[in-house]
Length: 139
Image (cartoon, rainbow, N blue to C red; front, side):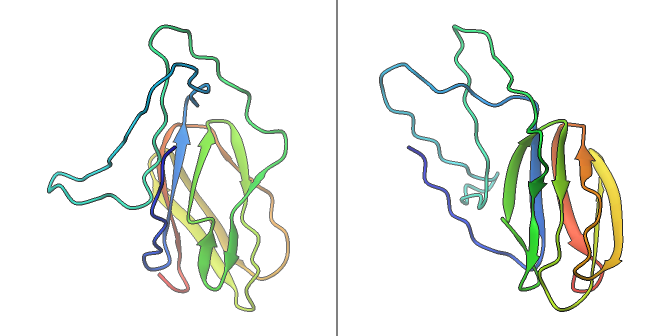
């Protein structure tokens, strides 16, 4: 069982779009994972997945319904989301202020101009990689 630290830093979020999700490990034993940066410090909000080396990887399809990342309290919730490439994500605004959601990340560049509580079409995340989200109102 892995434990992850979910600290919130500023009003940014990282979204990891993974090509593969690991099937459940059926072998006996314990796996201990420590995510550290080059200086040896723990990496907050890391996403780790494992795959068996002795079996083919079976990819589940992206979910039919969009994944939801809400804007609440001027933060993205959840703070980190791991998804499969091909997943659509909705960004509903639950705050009383308008937000301007965007990403300049290479795997997915997009912009949702100022919006309040109205629904916007979900964004398709079709390329793998880390996507950092921002908001022009309270970067």
